[in-house]
Length: 102
Image 1 (cartoon, helix red, strand yellow):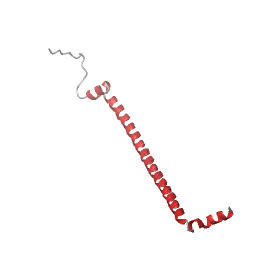
Image 2 (tube, rainbow, N blue to C red):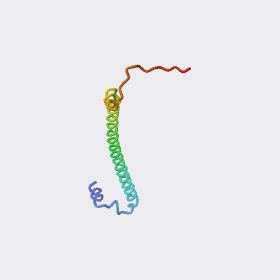
Image 3 (cartoon, rainbow, N blue to C red):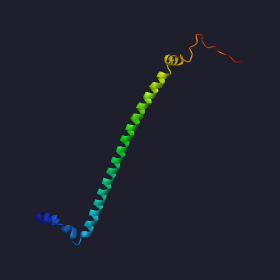
Image 4 (cartoon, one colour):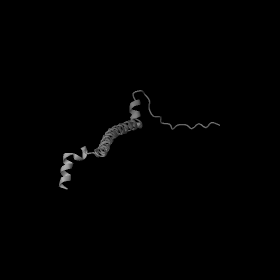
């Protein structure tokens, strides 16, 4: 066991006559590690992009709510009455007439 560990630390399994099989396996494992690191980086990039899009969506939702409140306030009868008073338009005292066409 001690001899095996010493040979392993010195690199004998990589330079002996059966080293071709060992090198193929080492390159395969190295390729898998590189592929795993690449996939992790791609996932990180996508997570960062999703976070940015979520922040942008939140900002647009807030802007939409603000605009909707502003429009609702502008459509109030009291607001319209105050804005149209300088022009001379006033609400009518008579109810609207219903026209029936035959």
